Image (cartoon, rainbow, N blue to C red; front, side, top):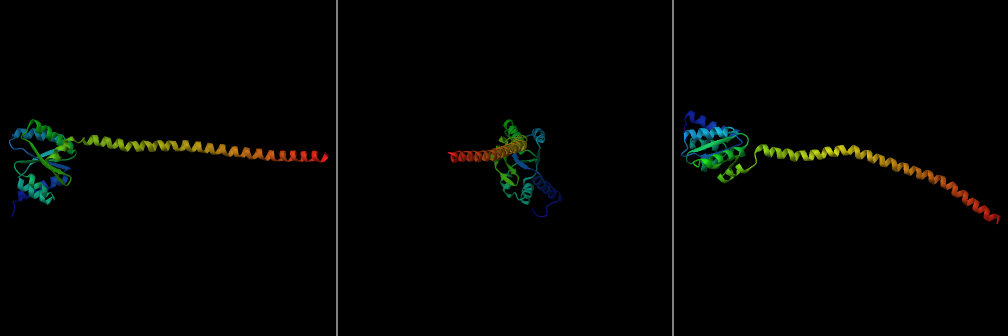
Length: 203
């Protein structure tokens, strides 16, 4: 595009910024949908962190190129709307899939996840993923288990140390008693031997 008008440059920059700021973007074809249908779709997506925008394909191509998303060009055919996602991509994908079931004129074409362009199958598969809240709950549970084990070990350490010290004390006491008994037994044995020797001498 040679010598683009300032307003077009501004739109390209806006789209590029949306790609940069979003966690994901989902492209759909909306051919045949009425204005009120799109308004309802926008409201539904907004509650899940999605913003549905429509730009000229030529301007989106420029923004995609500037963003390093050249592969997106093949999806920019026909009337295309882009849902920019801030947050839970799975929740937004679910909303789009549910809307498309009752409004078949809305067709999921593909999208961007992170910095990777994905096709319609992968994009639709996002809707089958657990929500971010569920994933965070699983993660918290996975992290809590080792922490609980660690807490149990920390509680067990003083208890085990006390048991160990008591066992060591008992062992030392037993050894001391044994040594004392041995000391008492030795003189007694010597006395017995002397008595035996004296008896034998008298005989």
